Amino acid sequence: MRTRLIAATVVIVMAAALAAWLGLGRQSSRGAEKAPSTTAHRRANASPAPERGTRRTVKKAPPSPPSARLRLRYVTTIGGHISPKSVDASGTGLVFAQNMIYTHTVTAYNDHSYRLVATIPDAVRLSRWGYPKYPGIYLGGPVEAAFSPDRRYLYVSNYSMYGRALTRPGHDVCSPSDHYDSSFVYRIRVATKRIDQVIHVGSVPKFVAVTPNDKYLLVSDWCSYALSIVDVRTAKEIKRIPLGPYPRGIAVDPRSTTAYVAIMGSTEIAKINLRTFTMRWITNVGTSPRHLVMSPRGRWLYATLNADGTVAKINRRTGRVVARVASGSQPRSMAMAADGQSLYVVNYGSNTVSKIRTSNMTVIQTVPTNSAPIGITYVPDRRQIWVACYSGTIIVFKDA
Image (cartoon, rainbow, N blue to C red; front, side):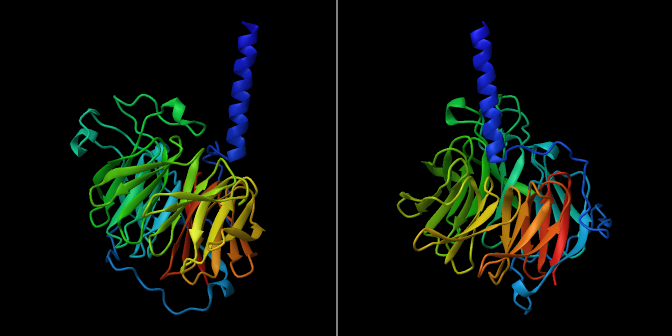
């Protein structure tokens, strides 16, 4: 009996150590917010307001100085009943926040007034969407989102589904042998702010990306150790590619020929041919690559290295890291300025945003945020940065 107890204790300690190495989990102090500056006390009115700017065409950014010459200025803080894991700008006047399993919603905001324009519950009847073996109502857990190229639709991953026929929800420390429940991606019609499609994928889907040619939806399945490739036309998974422990961020080249997937439980990035579905590897990137961003013309690939506290710049042609820069503790997500000259990185452990000049990979500004900044998006026509803080707020900055 004593031997079994010791063995069980060792397993628990190892699992906890793995979670800490990956930077998993959510900070426990939702209410312990740190003000971004002495003036950061204004709160946006969170009551619903008439929607503005829902045109399908993406707004073009007005002529402006190079982004690397500008500096981030605090604008406002958005509160309310939210727990944002990620934020995504439509480029047509709206920003969507995915509020995970703690709030079970997606919220949409006007990027001019900063007001809430819609709250979209994640509850669905799966049987009505073509999945009869799942009776009753199921809750999701919105994690990440990606827009279709025409900005008419938003695809949202759900960490797990919660309902009668699904009894093994996912976990941050997992493997395919755990047989956690598979999950679903929702498609939301931007014009109506309603779910209009439900797509079955792997276990604990995290990042989602739509190829620029609108052919494939790509989903990183955290606990399945795989990438789900979904045919956008049929809304069905057509291929699942094994990748290894903890696939996370995804980036696709402008020609829709190659997808890159960060493997967070490794030091590698998978390089997948989207015509043949064959795979190669970019090695020695750094420890625990999490999020990927590609330069506007597709020459450079950038990766946050969560365990190293750095951001790496990779030459796509050679697959080699050409520069690194320390950004802060546990860099999670990134956004890029429209001109490709600046990266904006949220540092989860430092409660900061770092602005990096991409030409020489130098941090040119660091600004404080509320606790647990984890998601970020860029609004090109307004030069805004929206930061999702897992502690329960969204902070808006402007490059000026």
